[in-house]
Length: 179
Image (cartoon, rainbow, N blue to C red; front, side):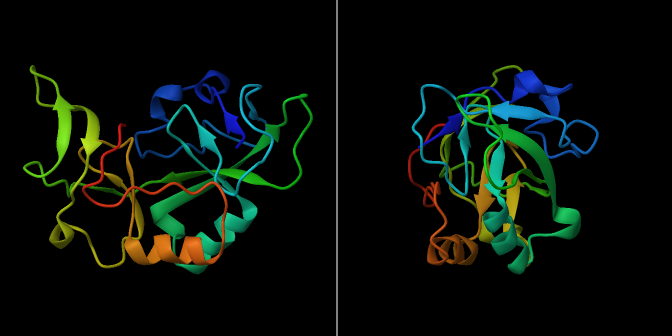
């Protein structure tokens, strides 16, 4: 699969990219991201990248919006995606920036690395959430304790799979991963 190697190098304030704050002043159609020469040639509906940013095709955006992932909970920011030869790709792509941050991590059942100094989470290896802390309407949001992690509710994940969107990677609750 194709992927984008460095998104942060093409934005004015890359420190905001995974924080769950508005990126409207940081990303616009004028921003250009390029597919890595090391990646494959197949471009998915969700485009993997090394920056931890959610990149979606117009088709994926339409499915998310149909599921209510709109309004104040997410920004869809268009940008120009270029192929390995530097030409704009077909179709529209967006940075899907979840703005909702919900602290719901079960620290006893999750595995993570934290800072000795302030207890801030530095990485997550296995995530278990506490469902009671998640509002019923939240379908796609950032983990409040570590905003680099996107959490997708099971029914939304099933809908995305049913729509046969490409480029999807989900980790089940309690499954090992590194982020």
